[in-house]
Length: 244
Image (cartoon, rainbow, N blue to C red; front, side, top):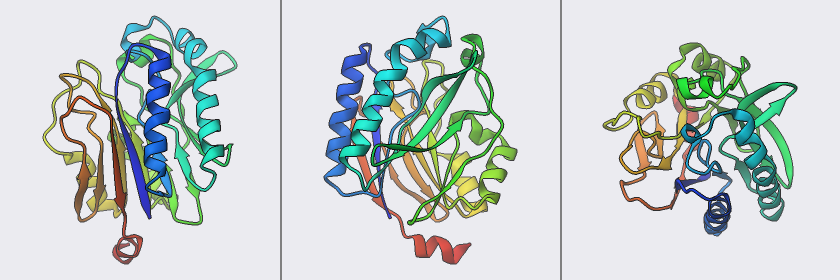
């Protein structure tokens, strides 16, 4: 199983963000992965701490981001696109949502269950349900950023059969510096899952660094460079299943 992570730096212009995402996805697709994954809030200019409301972010970013994900997944029809996260609306509520795409179709969605302070401040709503998508390759789960701190959310995702858990994350200015990936390494080891942490690059905040964490250790990790990068790794699913 081959996975490509798009490790993106934050930008202040929506067109630049989407153009950079498209460019890196095209670059990743040349490596013929089964999955390409983007970070949390990858298409939001300047990240969410500069906005007053979830509605404002939704109105600016939802439609162009979804159009990009649909377009890319239709072009690379055999690749699953784990589309970072978007802010989407249902009724009068707004959610931080990770979408999974293939061949132009939205296959599944997962909404963040554990919000941080700034997300509550701008009016996002909490969700409750886990997501595990069965593909012909493996069973894929999704958690978003702070969800990884919620034992219940982790346990439910594993209980539903997830072998690989995609974890879109984002680093704010206030994100604490972390040496390595102690929490995800422990979870990967104890639960016998692979965690694909898909982060962004933000000057002065290292907590959102992308990495692929297996039960046998970290097998790939983004460096501290303030630039976009593609990390492509091959996962040994037979080794993983033998441990489970």
